[in-house]
Length: 169
Image (cartoon, rainbow, N blue to C red; front, side, top):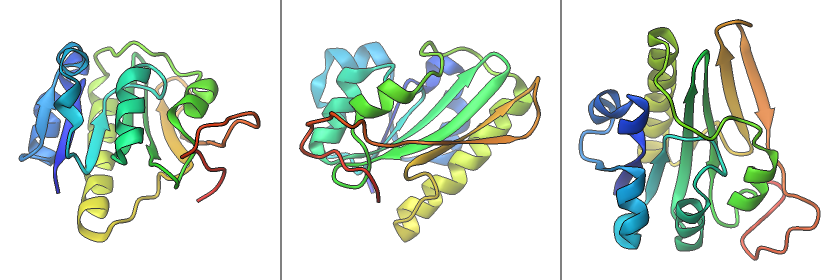
């Protein structure tokens, strides 16, 4: 499986994700935007930002049929998911409308960093070896100030006309 990781170095996740997916192609966000072929042929894209933060790259992956898995790190919180794929989930535009998560990547608290990387490793393993993920139509967030797992559901926006956008898996 060809995996592309974009934006991990900007969040400090790069070294950890290289250990989780050692054969993945890594790219900075700016590089990926300058080179539209970065996602060509990828089966899975790991995006180190909240849905909607980089709509150009998200739309390129969605249109190409590349599954996308988001991991967002902000001061005091980490979010894993959702998994986004053509004709399986809502499109990137619908996810961006619902996101509400900070768009700018930032360094993570070490515990939140380890939590996000551990969960991401399990999801990547499940996707690459079994073709499944728990992150279709949902994401999970842990906040340092309000400990406990928070689930966020994702849905198609009522007026979305994107051809690959669906309301349920």
